[in-house]
Every structure is written in structure tokens, then in C-alpha cells.
Length: 116
Image (cartoon, rainbow, N blue to C red; front, side):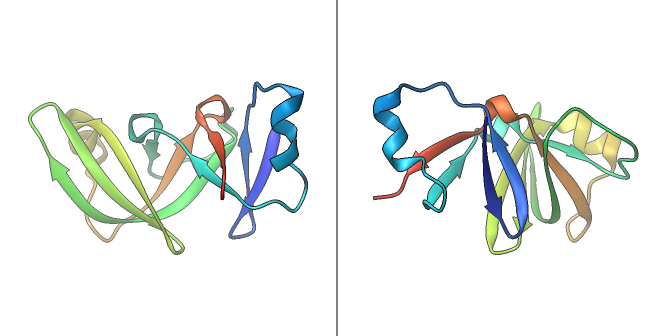
């Protein structure tokens, strides 16, 4: 497990790697945190504990609804996060542009990339 700080928030990634890759994964190294848009879940009014380690308070900047899937553009500090969820979920959550939501990503879906 590797933890990375982004805007003072700890992001966890479950890593499977060999010792040869360890050189760039040292404490203090700058890395890029990546995950697929389809792995970003959205919650509103989430209370209590949850097993998902990575939680981001975001602002909805845009919603592009499709027949089956919708693309939600989120702002987390200076970073843009995109979530692709079902249009049914967008409607069920009554998501709106300008609304605060929480983006959730499981640690096993997060990858770290070396910055050259």
C-alpha cells in the first residue's frame, strides 16, 4: 500500500510491483495519481463509515447525459476528475451543476505513475 498527499488529503494506492520499480517510489518523490473514469463513484450526503479509502469533496462543473451513461466533470482543488456513471444514477441522485458531492475511488483502482 502506498499513500500520496494531494491537497493535504491522503490518497491510497494498492501497488503490486517488483524491487526494480522501487527507485521512483521513495518518500518525497513526486508521482502522478491515475484511475479510470468508470471507477469514480459519486455520493451525496454520505454519513458514517465506508470501506473506500479515497474520498474527494468535489464541485460538479458539468454533466453530459447520455442514454445509458453520463459523464460528470468534477473539480477537486486545482484538479479535474471525471466520473462516468449510469444516467439512471445521475437522475436518482438528482445531480446538478454547482453542487458539492463526494467522489469515491477504491485503493485497488488507483495507480501511481513516475513523473519524468
